[in-house]
Each structure stands twice: as structure tokens, then as C-alpha cells.
Picture 1 (spheres, helix red, strand yellow):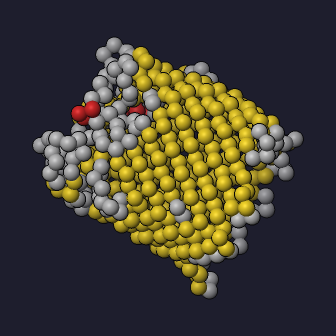
Picture 2 (cartoon, helix red, strand yellow):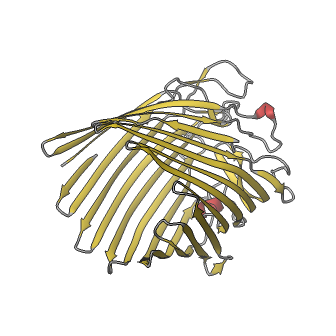
Picture 3 (spheres, one colour):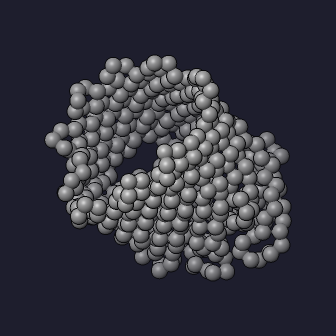
Length: 457
């Protein structure tokens, strides 16, 4: 990466390349074959280049973004099958413009527009040139107005996106998606907090019921506060959900989520150099027409609607910071998520089963990070754990994926020499080379190392 700063002008250029044979050893975690085997034909290649330019004027800022990426990967059959090796290439071109201006001390207006072009080519048999293709052109435009007055904030956001799809397998109509959002909330912390937002979505002239969220809360002393929110949100399926080659579902219905959430927040400065903050959220969601996924062929997944799903659980976050001395700091972060999405109703012929958990959704996920900052050096060890996951609609334990825990470590070093600033990064993921699978019979990589370098003037 390279960064150039000159007065009110900033330019950041980045380039990256990854190539891996991916012939790592694996042990299937479902227990049917305890012997290690070597994965083959799962090579990957990724190249990307991006440039970001910012120009600051008296009361406004102009931004230009350019990005190109090109990737290719071999797709071997599941380790339980002997089918052909597939191959996939992806290219993406993105260019965007943004203008942000301050009308006065209380009001800000921003405009954003972009051109996005994504190209997918899928070769069912790697050795044969015949391929499926899927090209999507997107033209988003948005306008946002933010107004602050009397310790309150109002946001009005209008967004329009045009989609055009070209595909060898499906015929998709051109699409205009319009989204309008209004948000209002108290802007400064105090004894009482409250707010609401409303959103309307319209696709090709067809609207759905608006989404909304209401929330309020109060302080409980100087360090503790609570909030209670109720929301009814509606989400349309994306154009990829409906028209992806070999697996899209044009008949998908939009999701409707009715949720209630209780949040408790604690923040305290224990000592002059010790800070503690925690948050706990208890939630209950009932979702009509939940969009689930089922594997239909090799690497393809087809979305479908589950008639009604209830998901209950908790989110817990804790951060402890200790500034030991001016050039040395320690931080401890812990995150925990517990969720239990259960099918309440299903449509006739639906692959879900009433009373069972949705597939591939873990009961719990947790993570710990321990950043240590010493002058210009940062060391960040981290640990994450994912519980077992069902892979079949009947929640069979025989086919459930085992839980796994991974340990990663990342080091960063910043060095300044005259007007040149450099950044170096080394990251080691899955340090102990643990076998695990996110998708059944698709083993994930073992230990691998990533190295990065950047400099600026």
C-alpha cells in the first residue's frame, strides 16, 4: 500500500495478490473417516488493486474510489464424492464518487453514486472450456441529509439502485430498487434516550409494508443504563438470491421480522488508567418467510422460505482497557452470542422440519482478543470458538459438524523515517493447525501466514 498526503489532498493506493495451492491435509470432522487425507484441486488465486482519493475544501469533501479484483479457484467435489473438479473465476470493477458538504453548523448533505460491474464464470468441468456466466451491472445513487438541533438528530436517506443481469442460464428483468429511510433520535447522552426509524422499499413500482423501529431507555445511576426496542423489519431478497445460475429462486418472498430486545450497558472508569465497558442484549425474534439455504448441487445453494421461525438468545460484549504507562497499553475483549432459531411452521414440501433448528446455525459463538500495544508495535492474539452445527433438517447428531476452536495471532509495526511512514503486518491464522469444517465435507485450511507492507509520504 502507498499513501500520499499533501495539505487537503490525500491519496491511498493498495495492491494485493494471493496464490495458494491449498493442498493441505485434513481429517473429516463427522467421524466417518478418521484418517488424514490431502485435499486436491482447491487452488486459489486473488488479485486486487484499489485507489482512494480525498479532496477537502472549505466546507465540503470530495471522494473518488476505484477498485478492481480478479480471483479464481478450483472447486473439488465434496470429500465423500468422486465427481469432476469445477472451476470459478470472478471479476469486479467498482468506481464511486461522493460529495459531502456542510450547509451550516446543524446541517450536512451528501451525494453518492457509483458504477459496479461483476462477472462470474463457472466451469462445471475444469478441463472443459464450456462455462456458465453471470454478469451484473449496478448503478446506485443516494442522497442523505442530516440535521442536528436542540440535542436531537434527524436523518433522511434516499437510495436508488438500477440492476441489469446478463446470464447464460437465466433471464432476469431489469430492476429499480428504491429505499427511503427516516431516522430521528436524541443526539446527546442523558438520563433519557429515545428514537425511531421508518423505511420504505419499492422494487419496480411494487412496494411492501414499511419497516420501523422504536426504542427508549434511561440511566440507572452514573454507570448503568438500559434500553428497550421493538421493530418490524422487512427485507426483500437480493437479485442474486433470485437469479443466481443453477440455484436462484425467483419465487422468494420477502422476510418479515418482529423483534423485541432488551439491552443493558455498563461503562466505568475504575481508575485513572483503567476502563471497563460491557453490554448485554436479550432478544426474541419471530420471522415470517425466513430465507434459508439448502445445498442442491456441489457448490450451489438454493434459497427457500421457511414459513415461520423463532430465534431467541443473548449477545454479550465486554472490553477492559489498561493504560499501563504512556507507551504501553493492554486491552481484553470478550464476545459471546447464543441463538436458537427453531422452525415453528413450514410450507408444504419445504425441506425444513417443524420443531428443529435451522441448519448450520451454531448454538454459541465466542471470541477473545488481547491486543498489546507497545510504542509502534501491536501484538494481537485472538481465540474463537464455534459450537457444533446441524447439517440436516432433522438435526441428526450423526451428521452434525463438531465444534472447533482456533487461535490466531497478528503483529503490526509502524515506523516513521523523515517523511516516509511504513506499516508492516504479519498474521498467522489457525496457529495450531486444527481441522474444521464450515460446510460438511468441505475442509477448511490449516495454518497459514499472511504478510502485508505499506508506506506513505
